[in-house]
Amino acid sequence: MVSSNTALSAEEYAIAMAELQIRGMTTEYILRTDESIAECIALAIHLRAQKDRTAGDIRQIFRKLHDIKGQGGTFDYHLITASGAIACNIVRERPSLSDEALVVLEKCIQAMQTVLQRRITGNGGENGKKLVEKLSLLAKPHLRADPK
Image 1 (cartoon, rainbow, N blue to C red):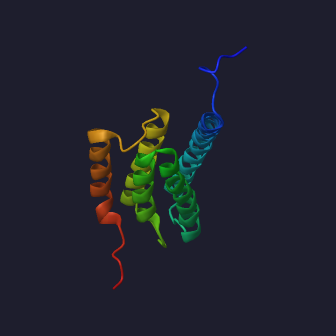
Image 2 (cartoon, rainbow, N blue to C red; image 1 turned 90 degrees about the vertical axis):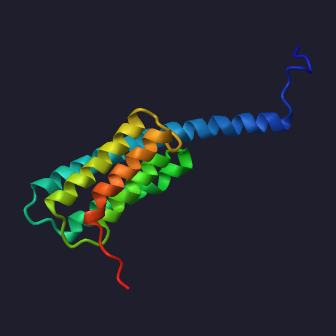
């Protein structure tokens, strides 16, 4: 017989079950995002091999990066969201992509991969801040000016 001191209330049980579901969803997110990042790496390799990088190829990597970026915050991977946002801004609505912009794009993808592999949640502290600042600085020359 379980004593009343160790029994869970209905509310405690519901919270415990919700936490268990969230852990399962987080594991699924990590696996799915790892696959998506691998696809982005493959797309970047494809882009690198192309002399004429088409808008269709660029849109394909944008869509994948946008999905990764959008899901990061939900699972407390804010550095993935930040790196993904920078990457998305590099390729958003581009008819072409320079070699230099592609290098920065690849650095953003590598950053997302490292964050995921090391399970760096939250904003990554001071190192995370420096990472985002560095990627932003590298990306700045490759961002489109907003039309007024």
